[in-house]
Amino acid sequence: MTHDAPRLLPCGDTAFTIEFGSGIDARLSARVLALDTALAERALPGVLEAVPTYRSLTVHLDPLRADPAELGRAVLALAGEPLAAVPAPRLWRIPVVYGGAFGIDLDAVAAHHGLTPEQVIARHSAPEYRVAMIGFLPGYAYLEGLDSGLALSRRPSPRPVTPAGTISIGGAQALVASIAAPSGWHLLGRTPEKTFVPERDPVFLLRPGDRVRFVPTPAERWDALAAAAEAGEPVAELCAG
Image 1 (tube, rainbow, N blue to C red):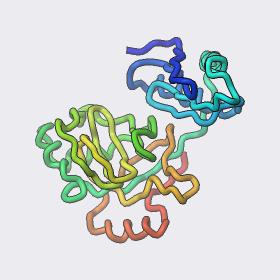
Image 2: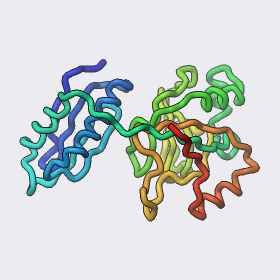
Image 3: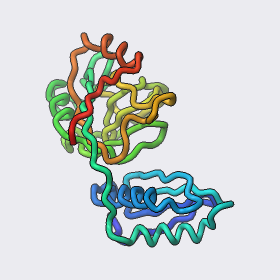
């Protein structure tokens, strides 16, 4: 369920959230990214950072430079204006080695849906995904566009550690994991691309609004691609929008 009128939600004295709705919806996401763009263009005093999610934008501020309530009302008014033009989305083609040690849940996901592993790979790599948000951990990319026939509730027991670069699904979402971390998602594959490098500029490869295509890649290519990524070379292809 969604609501059209944005809401201002205080988050203490150093942040507030502008909420556009209550679900995962491409329309809501577009409004969030438009507000993020408009806010960056206005450069309002006291704004430190804006963090977009599926349905809201959280604004972190310096309370010594701006009154949280006053700034919140200003951003809420900005949210009610016509949508700003957002930067043209970039398209990334990301190599993924599916199954085996790289995607230990592929067979189970296939069995659950009555499909072969090859059919799951074909369905998972067919869509053009959209990066809806970066969150949970630095560089974690949450994607819209998963084939509804692959949707699957998260695992009842999360794994304590899953590898960096994991490509997984949970519910109706897809994920590109940036670092090794616990996860209750279903692991379909892994990419050697490094989507989060603190010493790199920019530190995050993907940004909200980007588009992503997954490219099934033979396991035999993993070592060479991983070595290239470790050396700082891009292994994902940035295509024309």
